[in-house]
Length: 203
Image (tube, one colour):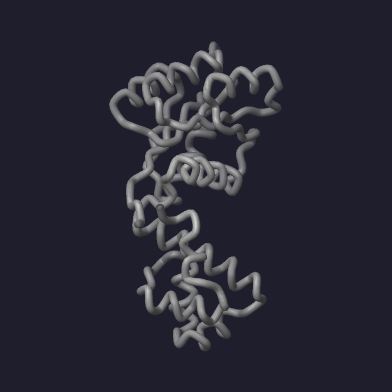
């Protein structure tokens, strides 16, 4: 059964340019996002609004990562903390992991690495599809990957499945939602089971 629930991500980073970039990427990926430059207001926000993911800069001034992570998880026990740090040091990471950090991304953070880390944490917690829009994007990514794996063009797959190239292109971009029957025809043209396009997208 598809779990269509909104996913809220909290960003705690004192660098405004980093916050702005992360907010842009995550909003574009259909996540709900809140961002703070200090721990205290972020912690208060967590007490009021559940966040599945918290992105935490491990090197903010006056920031003791283990203590901060413990405080954030105290406010929201189910939030999964992903640390952000330039040249993270082993002792710092060990303390953060012991406090409950689930993953770490090295700064400057890359968009693909960020989204992949979030997907992993959501999948581990049993949440991988956030909305119909995100489901369409997820299916589109799976279709593109499957088509690339068999080295077929959009025109070839579209013809085999009875679609226009424009419709298949829009589906691969997640711009439209296919009916199950149409999706089954595309999967048949790609010689893959229908279930594959929903992997990590259903519970």
